[in-house]
Structures are given as structure tokens and as C-alpha cells.
Length: 348
Image 1: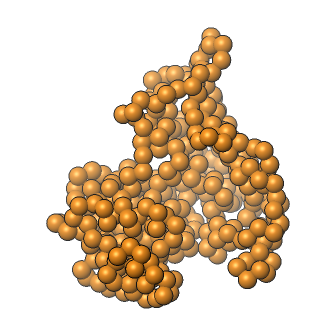
Image 2: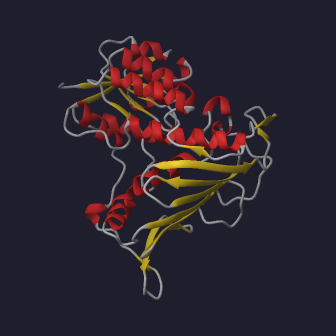
Image 3: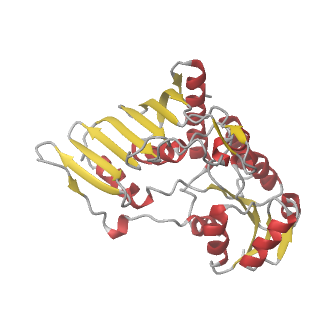
């Protein structure tokens, strides 16, 4: 395939910041159409990014036989329907994260992709730990921590509750499904380090039960927790504790410990970006670990997508099988919150 023609469905933040400009910058790639929530918004986006064909509906993108691939940048509630329709239309698919609203939809997406093995199917990966992932994986594999005892992760918005805040789409179940705050991106990232989850147990509560919508009216947050604790068993041994919240003042943005029988790794963001520390049995204290340049990962989602279409490399960040696993973990947490019990994984 010489020139790859891409259509955009949904023009949100990541599409604006990453997908549209970075796809267009790749040699032999043309971004030729965009469908957003209205014809007017499609036209504005097309004008900003010099896209020749703004259209009114996502169906116009899929019905265009000249388009080879689509980038789906909508909210999660649309991901499954759009992905399956795009694959049925014979188009390669890059879909924004989270993969879907729930694991049933994610399984349907995976099944559709298996029916078209000739097409590339990619989920935009959780990007926040890419600069450290390879270093952490290598240190664990090389025995730095020994056998993993447990992972203790705390992720916070570092804000006190704000009852006059604007309702975000992530706080609406009709848009976001079972996804909760940044729980999904962190559970995906930690799977890269310590493998799959074997079970999940969760407790949580909603401190801010109503927020202001775009018209200034108070609207329910749908009881999506803004403070949650998850305990998971790891398939490879050990367990994980993940606390995610957006309502705790003075908390670090992220603080993750990986404890093992011989050493400990700590990935922490106390306001100046993530930094990695480590210490082993016999050390007086933990020391900062500088990641070698050749191990520092970075955002290359669009490059990987196009390379996969051209047969240059496989999809690693992130394939649909991995997406189903993290969506099952998300659903296990939702079930545990509702039922008050441990939920085994995989679900199916």
C-alpha cells in the first residue's frame, strides 16, 4: 500500500493534540476526512488541520471506499459500535482508550478483529509510564526485586472536593461506562510490569454526588466513585493495592511501590513528573535510577499503527487482547463494588 488514506471519527483532545497532526506528518499518509459531533465542528477541525473532506456523519467516513484506515476518537460508549462497523467496512482501526464501556463490548471488538486478521486493530495505549516501562520490566526480569510480594499504588488528583466543579464526561456512565477515573490507565500500565490480574476486590464511595453541567445545572455523577481502593491478586504471584482518588488534597499525583523479596522499586510524581527509585536488601536508602536513553519509551502510537498496516512491525501498544484483559479487570471492579465480594479473573 503506497499512500494510506485515513479518516477521523471524533475530534477530541487526543485527536487534536496527537492523532491528526502526527498521522499527517508520516510520509505516505493522508488524513482525508473528519466526522465530529456536528457538521460545523467537523468543518472547523478540517479547516484547522487542512483536511479536505469534513463530513456530517461517521457513516460517511466508513462508506468512503477510498479510505483505508480510521482513527476513532470518540468517548468509550461509541467505541465498540464504531470499531466493529469499521472492520466490517474493511478498514484498519485505531481506537482511543479506554477500549470500550465494558468487557462485553471489548470482547465483541476482539471477535470482530479476529474475523478480519488482514486488518490492523490498535487501542491508544496508556502513555504516562512509557518512559519507564522497559527499565522496570528489565529490572524485575533480572531479579532486582526478587519475587514480587506486592504492588502498592496511590494515584490522586491532589485536590480537595469541589462541589461546584464542572461535570466531566468521564463522570457520566452513559459516556464512560464502567471506567473509573484514571484507574484504567494505571491498571493497564502495571500489567506491563507484573502481568495479568487473577482477581479483584474493591470498595469505594462518591464524595461529590452532583456537579454542574454545561448549562450550569446540577447533575448526578452517576455514583461513579471518586475515591476507590482495589486489591488484586496477581497471576504470577503477589498482590496489588491500587488507590485512586480525585478528592484528596496534598496527595502526590502518583506513588507506586513494587515490593519484592530482595528489593523495592518506586515510581513517584511529587509535582515534577515521574521519577524512578530503587533499593535492595542491605542498601541504606533508595537511590534515583536514571533510565538509559535506549530504554526510554515515548509516544509513537500513530507511527506504530501505520507501520503495522505496512507490515513493518506488530501492534504492541495496545492490541485488542490486552484491551479485553484490562476491561475485564475494570468490570471485575464494578462487580465487586456492587456485590461486595472478590471477583475472579478472567471473567470468561
